Length: 335
Image 1 (cartoon, rainbow, N blue to C red):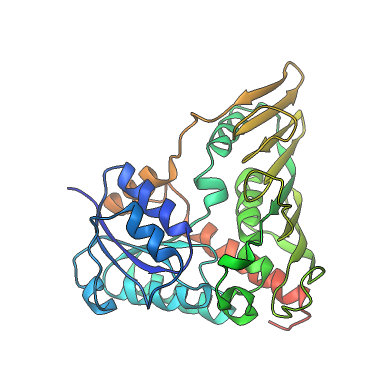
Image 2 (cartoon, rainbow, N blue to C red):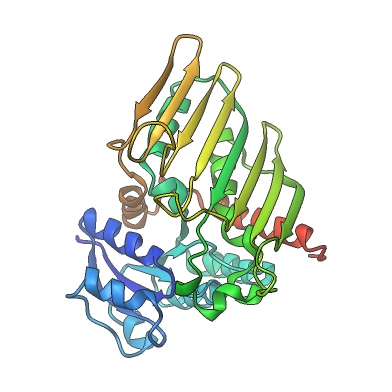
């Protein structure tokens, strides 16, 4: 039976990749609903011109889909996900999946009550072939046990394209809640850590004083029983870089290291998805562009068979818990 889905909320361009990758594995989109006319809507309609637009959220939820894709304003994603799960849908949401601890508690309760899947599409892992190759290398023991990760998530501000909510802390959730959730996910995954704690967190606005609600820099550290990690995220990508950010991940193992130059390799190989592997026998750069993106097929399998092959539900919850904890620590707020 063909998996079907609806798209709910088109406020972030990540909905393009979410829709495209589900269609690529053979899933059928029944249409979309979004509030008003957000900036990504025109590009979405251009990419997917045959999709029906539902007039109301209720109509979209009544269309009979198996899965709901959610990419609304971050502060609104939890409410849409809960509505979708209560209507019988599993959910793939853009990151961050929620922006407060109270929202996360509501989602946990809804998952427990409905038995639905709440999955966050951590695109910096799930939509990046170099991560797929690195995952295989780690599982094969190429660098021994991973004991530290360094995750860098620089982004381009693109000020003219940003809506008002982008500069509103309450609406986007803070820079660590938002961007750093990617790197937290990768730390837990690659180190095999089921639980971790935030040991340091800091946010700032260094370069955009006219936008006091924007946090344009964030950093944090994590520690688990198995490993430790450092994360840095920012909105400082210079104009000369040919893409939105020089995102990198370094995995330090007991027998070697792997560095992923995900989106660009300045001064190195042209294109994306370069994987540097150094261990006792190998010192080379691997082309990972054809390594594949297994998350989407695995999620479809999980929806059909009620399994957890794409990502465990506990992992998804804990990533957001740590991101929210780090944000609170950085802002000096009590949980």
